[in-house]
Amino acid sequence: MKGNLRLYYDEEGDFLEIGIDKPSNGYFRDLGDEVFERVDEKTGEVKGIAIFNFKKRTEKLKEVELSLPFKIELSV
Image (cartoon, rainbow, N blue to C red; front, side):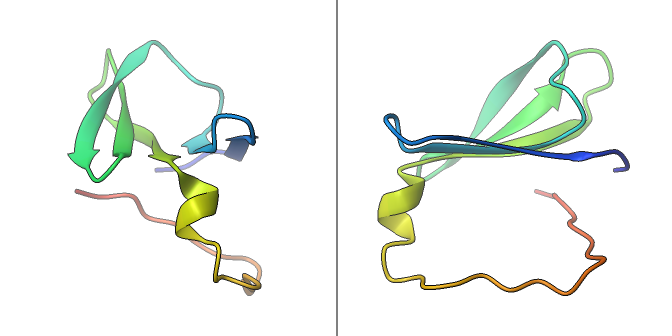
């Protein structure tokens, strides 16, 4: 999966979406435990993930540190 990383967080809904490039026509597939993958309708390629109750899940997390550049792979 190549492209620009896109992050979206809705604080009121406590919803995080991580995707590659701009959203295309597609759908979310339920992976369980309020985690979903965004699937491109035409190609069937996974284009991102969505996590409900993200803040609640990370209450004890103080800091995230990543070495740049970094690679993210989304797979089932």
